[in-house]
Image 1: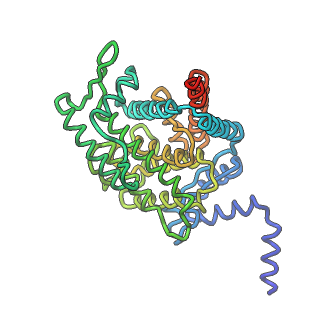
Image 2: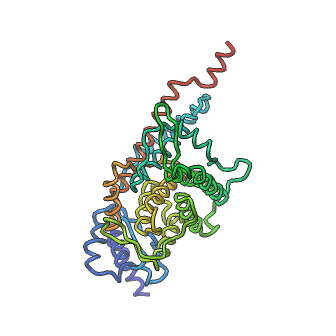
Image 3: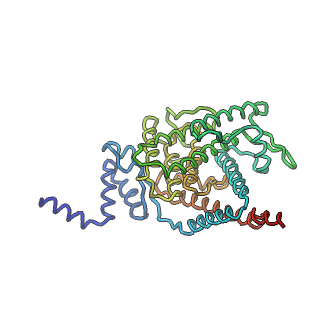
Length: 396
C-alpha cells in the first residue's frame, strides 16, 4: 500500500504538460532520441494541440509502425461560428416569409462545378473555365441523371451503382468526341473534359452520402459497432467514380513527385488506412475536433498514406469536403492558383507533423464560402418578393 501511495503522490505532483510528454515518449519508445528532441517534444512545447491517429495501439510493436500525429495552434472560430449561425437564422426567416431559395442551391452547384474544375487543374487536367453554369446544367441533365431515386430509401451502394452506370453512358455518348462534351454557349462553343464530369459526379455522390450520414447521426448509437468499413467503402467508391470504372488499392510501392517524403509501403498502408478510417468514424477519437481541423487532418493523413496509384489528391479533397458537408459547413475549393501553397502545406504536415498551414487553407475556404452564401441570401432578399407579398398583391 505504501508503494501505491507514493506513486499516487508522484502523479499528483506531475504537471499536465509533463504527463503529456511522458505519454509521448512511452508511445514512441522505439524511435531515435533525435526524433524526440527535434520533432515530438518541440511540437508539444510550441503548439496548443496535438492529435494522434490511433491514440491507443493494441500492441507495443504498433506504436512506432502505425501511429502518426499532427500538432497545431489553437484557433479562434468565434467569428466564423457567428457567421454560420447568422446564415442559419437568415435562411429560416426567409423560408418562413416564403422566399424561393433555389438560388442558394444553384450557387452550391456552381461551387461543386468550380471545385471539380479546380481540383482537376491542380493535377494538371486543365479544363475550360469560361462557360456559364446554366448551359452546363442543362446539357448535363440532358445526358445523365445524377439524382438518387426519389421513390426509394437512400442507399449508398445503390446510388453508387446508378452513378457508375451514368459514367458509362457519359463515356459512350462522348466517345465520338474523344471524351469531350461540347456545350453551345451564348457566344462560343465550350469543351468540357469527361474527367471534370466524372469528378462532378463523384463529388455529388460524396455530398449525398454526407447529407444522409448527417441525418443518421442523431439516430446512431455508439454501441452499434465499428463504422470504419463504411468510410473505406466511401473512399473506394469516390475513387472509382472519378475514373469511371471499378478501382482497387495499390499493391506496389509508390512515390510522390517533388515530395521529400515517401508513402508507406504496400504491405502496411492498408493497416494505416484502417486506423485513419476508425479515427474519422470514432467520435471518442475525433468527435471533439472542429470540422475544419478534422477535414485538414484527414486530408493530410490520407495523402501521406497514398492508397492508390493515381487520383489520391482528387479523392482526398472530396473526402475532406465530405467531412465539412456532414457537419453543415460550406464546401472548400482549393484554387489552381494556390497549388504551390497547398502542396507546401501538405508537405509540411507530413514531414514535420505541423498542420497549421493546411488548417489555415481550409479555414479561409470555409469562411470565404460562408461569406458568399450570406451575400447570395442578401441578394435574393433584395431582388425577390416573398410568397406572402406576391399573394397579397394578387388579392389586391
